[in-house]
Length: 488
Image 1 (cartoon, one colour):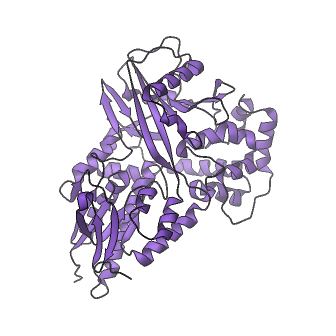
Image 2 (cartoon, rainbow, N blue to C red):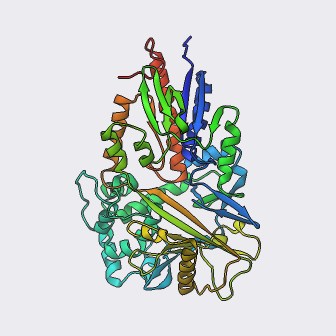
Image 3 (cartoon, rainbow, N blue to C red):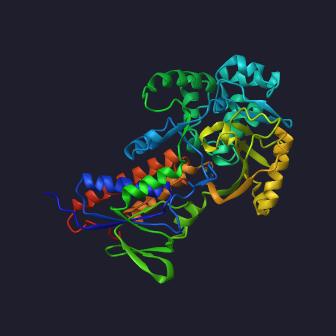
């Protein structure tokens, strides 16, 4: 019978990635009968990271992300295992419509778009967002030759090459920038939307490829227990997922909140973590679910630090406005609106939350969220809260006619929260992984800074880190006296 040495695994970071890593470590250790003790360290007073739900006066207010993608299985599977599948909430019927600001006015986003790429001709040809020449240029994608260069390029340059600048600037950029708050001409195609390049290579056309991929994907969505909605949330807010994970792990994981890690050093039999006030903690195995710039400061090696620091982060904020009654003469008949970078507004987007998610506001009341901050515009966040609220109200009035004072408001600031997968990102990750494998065996990284920023992506990375950790332990056990990491 295989015998494993008692091992102490430490997960650093109590956001959704770290919680998922701890959850799957517990599962896999139990399945393989590994004698594993697990400690999770979180520097804040509360778990959840960017997932924060505030429940106030009957409103359900998301201070960070407000939903997750139905099509990504990691969060669906985890929700089911935690018994949260009965709490799934789809978007409301008004969410099928979205507006985009063009020349200072709201225009409906044409139907038949996927990631801002037209796959139905009639609504695209009728839209006032794009000029006749811009529409013709986009359709050139059907005839342009594919580019055979096997080299990373920016997402913006790829889309402009295929669809022309008008579609990119007026539709695709505001849609995709909402995910990263970044500059499309700096973001890596391979790290953000590698499927676009794959479709170009397979079909010779991005439009043709997107249309075919949608047709092939539709028959696969057969689970009748999952609401038919692109985005999902939970009845009591996304923090329900954090609460359920904590409850499931309370008897298996030691949680230490308000505990920051300041440095990691190797020892002959594992690692030593330097914590608050000079305290140290021994670990045999580490999963670091912290932002890349935080992780960089934990290591002494400058080569590793530099690569981690090459992953930049952007600061953003959102302003929540709550109303006790529906503002008169204001038609909140959509999920909200997006603002292209070229428009003369400081808002980047607004979600009409009570229209998109009817369960978030009491009957007859209204909840709106507005977004600020993106690459090159982070100075806006230096303003005081009241200044930001006044700015948001002024621009909402200009765009929607909304002039009613809110019953209450809230400003949520997220400094250095949006990682940027810039060109060459995957090569950076390869260097980091190889460096850790050689110099820090038994240390694994996961989180939004690496391979996906959404909740499902972070859960999947947490699970993958747990898989790697358990595989590492099993390989170590096959060699005498190597049940825990040793210095190379």
